Image 1 (cartoon, rainbow, N blue to C red):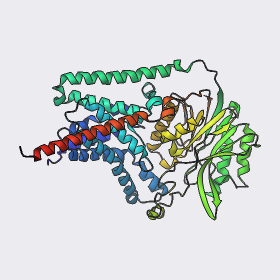
Image 2: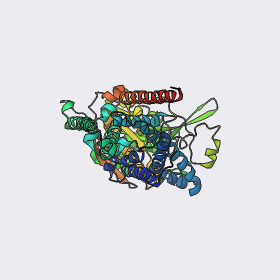
Image 3: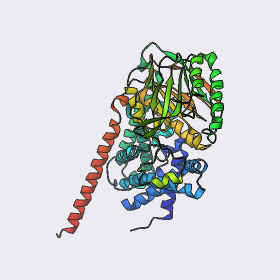
Image 4: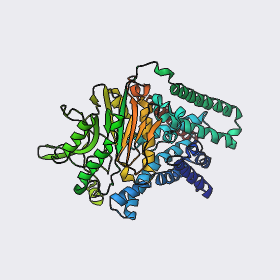
Length: 520
């Protein structure tokens, strides 16, 4: 077995670096279209096991540079030393790198296949889908998210989700590799067909994007516009939960909310855990929150921790409340259903009990029981708390239940001044496109934003600034997109053809071994 050459390793490292550089906050999203070419070049003539190793190197470089901010979270807020916080980052990096390693290993088996770039892209997307759903799922920064600002390109998300742009990106990477590869230049006839097919898919994607961006498909529906305000109070995470600062926190939110009164908002949104105490029973400060909704004459959405006691057991929830201005209706609420592992709960707690001791900041929350919108008259608000915005199925479920606005409450203060808030915002954009719903995104320290149903960021706050954003929001669209109705049919199809291809290659290899072992 041949050892990996230094040149091959460098090519894998280059792909890993280019993949990371194509994600925000940088402005190098174009690199995603060529980022895999060095890795594919390095896989030439390699065995599946060598391909696995090269993919593991590329994946490790990519994910450790993409998600370095985990050390900031664990070091600054978990009070861990840099050496201890490096451990979880390395473990997560190696886990995520396995997916690129498997992709690379499978790709080495495609030698001699016709239209192998189709299978290559299918492998990549299938593995992205598995990563987003296996165990608790971690679909952070899938390849398609690099294009969140390319509005014409990402409109296909209402048909195939973020996986559509991912598929196209890998397809074009494969085509460019074939163009520069000597062994593929010899088969010029096939290459011409590959160019034709990829050009057809790309042209169809952009044509559909132009159609959706033009608004011709919307018809002439009567608009229902609501004035909405977002309050970003920029509360320092280090004092957020200190009881001595609770009153000043609420005073800050009230003062900033009053700045929006001239806009006459119908809906005001505060971020995740904006109310840093148990709103349900705080007799001193909860009346101030109630009076804010009454004084503003507007609906008020905000985050607060909550608890329930049953049979001597207390369960804690990450909750979003909806208050009506007349205060006659009881508050509605939504409890976060998809918690952050090792952040809001510890999976397999009996086995991993040491994690809570190691990281005091790790929460102990219970998951909510249902995903239903919060409703008031003709407003139906689908709440996504923090990490939930990266899971397409949650936004789809809320939209199918009648949500005509998506509301993302988040507290990205944990991330500090890193690339994570930029990455988090880029993923939220796709939830609007997939479901054709506007999104109101309220963040404690930023980025707060108004996102249109076509994915355009209409208003955007600064990072670590006190701001009030105001915008009219159209909630008149009630139709459901193909993706909202049917979900990931495209990916399921790709998983099927990927599985069939892998099975056929394994069968061919098995038959080949039998023939070699049988005497003639």
